[in-house]
Length: 486
Image (tube, rainbow, N blue to C red):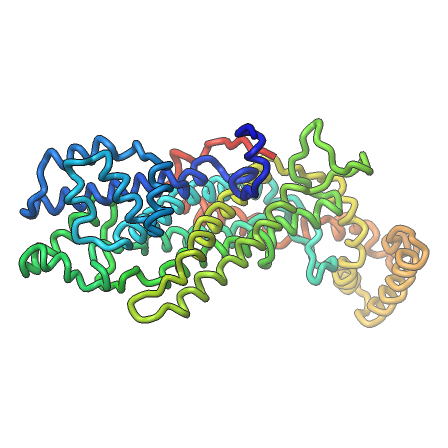
């Protein structure tokens, strides 16, 4: 069977084959993983040489010259015999580095390359996600600023409530995303290196190599940590770094999934609801088809994708929580298979969600006339208190006015709910001689902009003080466009 045909005869994760970006797919690839293993062996050899162990410059140079050219077929064959992935790659590396073979992996345990590589992938994964999140926040900030003063119906319990503005609602989305930004930054900054700790974390093998010199063992740990680009290593580990680190890494991703899908406010769910009301829509290409059966439909498929993937992202947090809770003493291997799935999938899922959300926020379409029509359908009911206050100012009795408005409101509600008509409360007020003293002021009383409070001012202050400063570290990457493959 040809290679192309064989590819479609086995399961392929849609996270890679259909959704995630090339950079995130590479970050968790075998190529990245195993070249990082080789780099870690090079770092170890360099540091051991610098600290006086019998490692030569020729051995280090030989390892460096073969850091990238991995014979994956040989490694797979070795693993099938040895049933040990790290030793399979030690043998494969040694095969192309015969001079360096005696000192590759000197004093180390498997978790030296395994766990440290995982930490590098987590760090680099955050490095890919943070600029993408910054771009989403930037696009939404521009949207919020543009529509800061556009009145729209607010909803509580998905029932029409007091007016807000389109921009103010976007700031509710932004506030949660800003929290996610800080959480991701904190998680990345808190990551440390496992470092050079040995089989059970005691550094016994390295203490033996350095003939009891504790200072050199600490120098070795520090030097390799710095070569790997970390400021600190965990001071104590078992054979592995604490699996609680995985919780702290995946938790902000799951929390971001909640922001995008099901927190209050719920960005993509909000957009889906507003699309039903025909007030706001996600981008829709000229030749895009909404439904195979109903040509008129404009389904919010990008937001639906985000919600769908966000559920997976949220669910993945259960894996590191349970894994950390069942680790025995210095380590057990029941974490391994789970982490091979849960760590990459969390970052891959977050990656495509942010790419899709960037695409959505760059092309949100607002329909002000539809929003205005919806306001006018509900505003007469919301304005009843203002009408009462205006009548009192004109010399009327509050209780009498309240009763008049109550009766007219119920009549108008009957027209809307039982007869399917439009809200005619305003017409009833205008037709009632009782309200003659304020008829000349009704337009001002019913101006939607008088019902939005300080929403525009809140938007301006929030964007200026909380959102824009958060984007400063990402200025160089903020205007990058992405091509979303649908």
